[in-house]
Length: 534
Image 1 (cartoon, rainbow, N blue to C red):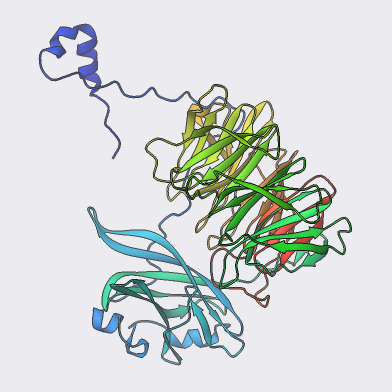
Image 2 (cartoon, helix red, strand yellow; image 1 turned 90 degrees about the vertical axis):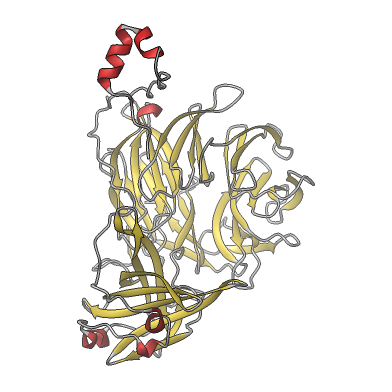
């Protein structure tokens, strides 16, 4: 809990006579100064966090471990409308679920959020539960139970079970969730689930034209950078498919041509990509910062990695601004590495920044006007000064259930405004006035369905381009940043696409808007999509 400030009466007495306080207990440290009041032109908004407890979705019975962790057909839920579940759409359907876990806390029974899903084939049979093969199910007029099991450690085996209770139409249901370990009920809760189709009454597209679609066979594609007339798509390891780099010649956006596809030995978790002049930089989870020469843009040549030979470093994302490269490293030290790239093919490490006392790690960052804006996952959103030799923390914006993931920053009405987004259940776009880093204020937001998550974003002038996983591509007019207004969209998520799963990280994931009149988007299943810029 936060440190309590000294009682105001005691503070007044001590101020009048210091000797009266020093003769007894030591004087407690002074509380930190109150942040300055918000002085901007927009209304300050309250912060609700990514998740608000909705209360139990169903009154789930207190099943004992023998029933809860046993055969699916033995699980009974009195008071449910099982007949309503027969009308659920199951043919080739993917459902996403919000799970409300219940546990015994200091203040009694408490709740926390979780995310899950399940998937059916064309014959209405389950093919995955929580991203794994089903290990038992009962689907009939009296049961809607789906379960999966997995080995957690050599000593622990977990079983996860969704037990449907009632349907609210053909695409929505509620029910009970059970989590067993080694045959003993560990957690219980309730859930709501929704079939992942496009938002109700929304067309595939509005204001965006799909020019081309290029499948990426290597790993799971996650990010893209466009330069020298080529698109460089990086992928992470997935389902026995090693990640790496795939290169497309996109000078004809209607008919891209793949020119290269490769990875390095034992190194396939490539999650971020950027370029400067003839240098391409790739974030590797196994080898740190990878540097490639783009003398031949169609076939990048590997130059080196950093650090070389000093032990494995996980670099998750990269960002270049001017002659500085920022590499966000989750491990081993949870720090942001800052390089001089005046010589693009020979980065030189200048300094590092680690958030003192944090529990998260730097996921993404954006440099703007002498400051570095870092998404530090569970620690929230950080503002760091780049003016001196050593970066210093200027301010932090934290919120409940934070997993701060990506941001973009610009100037509006003379104020510095950051667009920030998380990556978790219900994550969405926050609009923050960061002019005073010690008093960051929320002034707007853009939120879609609570079962989905936002991912990456690009700010170009007064347009914010958002890769929103299941919600596809969203283009926002942010000329008034306090009131983001959607002006175009394209639903990239299609259940029938190959390699779709029931996970949260599905759909539009990476994006670039290089200023050539086009939008380049990576979809986890469809690959590289090129759109006209509205």
